[in-house]
Length: 140
Figure 1 (cartoon, rainbow, N blue to C red):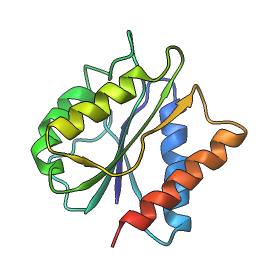
Figure 2 (cartoon, helix red, strand yellow; figure 1 turned 120 degrees about the horizontal axis):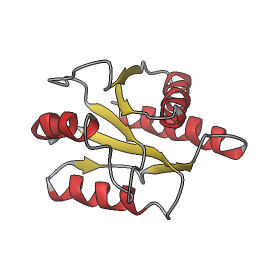
Figure 3 (cartoon, rainbow, N blue to C red; figure 1 turned 90 degrees about the vertical axis):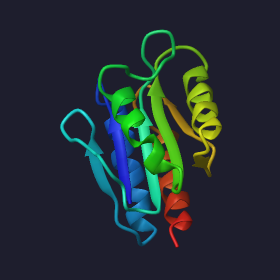
Figure 4 (tube, helix red, strand yellow; figure 1 turned 135 degrees about the vertical axis):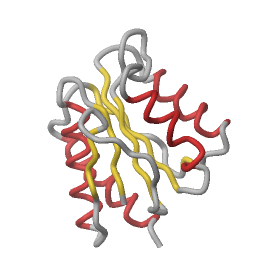
């Protein structure tokens, strides 16, 4: 399965790597794709994991991630999607808005999104790996 993410400070990338570890521990393969370095036009996988940090006033990153997401949005309608990201302020409103936006477009978000304050450390490391394990179970 693909884990497509954007990371500004590295926190979201750290989360993506831990989720990948959980997916692999669950017996599935995970391919990490940093949207800043890669273009994704089509997704064949049944399960897609999307990650983006909160920016500005709790918004998705607008110059790279949002355009990539808009390009993929029709392709995501037949997939099982999981969302994650990091934030440094607020209460996670950006994730709630993102999840609502995805479901309103007919995209199936199957797990409660994972949000981590800043970098994953302590209990948050296990939380990220466990999230990956849950994602692995979505893949049939």
